Length: 226
Image 1 (cartoon, one colour):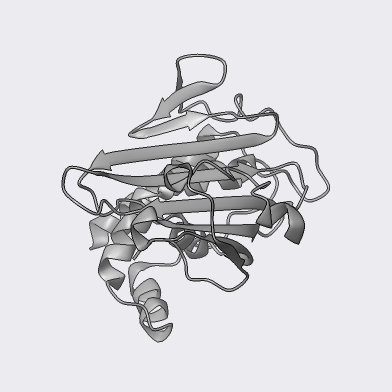
Image 2 (cartoon, helix red, strand yellow):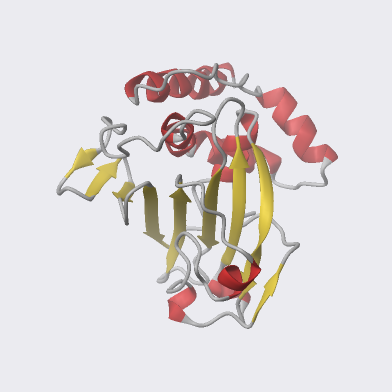
């Protein structure tokens, strides 16, 4: 357990220093005991698994926080701010098991899939561990549970400008199918309104859940994942 704590803390330091983040002091990292207590008090289950998945998501969380502009600052060059990524082209690369893409200026996406996997990452908890507040904008409602869960949020970190974040998780329904985890971030400062959200005009919107159109939009919804 102590090794897990040290690993998460080390990943935080390495990613922030590697991404060249300046300005805001990083928020305290919530340790395992505090996380488990919070998770349990919130009515969570499988809190130990969530802790491990949050640790797996540390590179994503640290990269997002390092890339978020300082309050009142301009959006930085996203590609230049990700030296740990092994780039295969101007807009595509790899970060460990994650596929990284730059869909447009000021935007970043992570993609992961594995056959038969229930999951592996929990970015939402990884951000909360780092003191990030997540304001839900809502979730598209898909016609079947096997199509996964998606949530659009505004992420607020101390000393950083808010950014829009979308997280999608799909556990593999059967062993021959793929578990999927997708993250999209927009650092431009533009926040989609209700009409844009319902129409799928948000970071990563559209094309998920086998390109099946959602049946509605919910403003209150659970976090994707366990």
